[in-house]
Length: 281
Image (cartoon, rainbow, N blue to C red; front, side, top):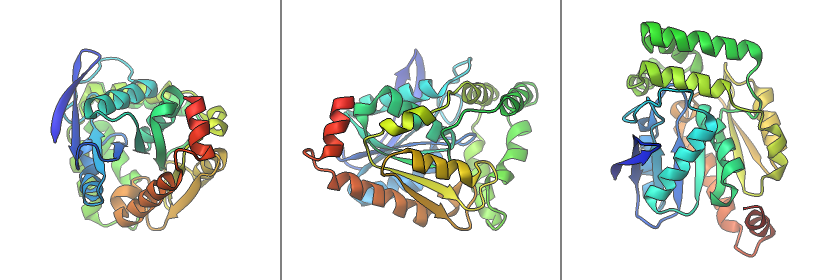
């Protein structure tokens, strides 16, 4: 099922596979890809009796750009709007990089709607001043010269050196829909995100932190700190994968997501985890 939803007066594009009413897994894409990068995972969800969904961030895929810095809180609210459109009260969120930042924001804003989280190749800390400056330079380059001024040099760095060329070609195809305004808005929005580290001890839902062993963007120390900070979180390090581990090693990442869902299912409504979550909603 593909459909458009209205968010803040603009169209956003939502895809879903699987039966209505099934447990929902909402995937949030990394920068600078769009939601179609999760197509394989939506199919895996449907085959497993789940409903998989993904939404395009503004200015990517088929969603209209916001024309302003689109913060991670904004992306979290878009995720909530996607769940509303699907008729889902709550869901498991799986977010990679920028999508992981949005998942951390979703936990802060909508804790009662989060069943669990797969945090892929992401971190809790905020940008350094140097990183903020670099994002602003990239935003201006995208607006002045087009998104390729950013994506052409960035995408090879998001993959493991051992990844075959076909994986880079796929990543490039998923980034092709990025608009200059969407790239600038996302970069500026990521630069504005707060440090989520103080929020981590308040998590009361299952979580898995997935890292690429060869990630050149998010250091291993950052993903390890994220996993340590969330009570009960597991940490899966994927060999032979970089920052886009879900594209490079889909079977391994899917296995980690399945393990997360199994943990959620073991947390019955009467369990302390579920009761704590309800109390914190």
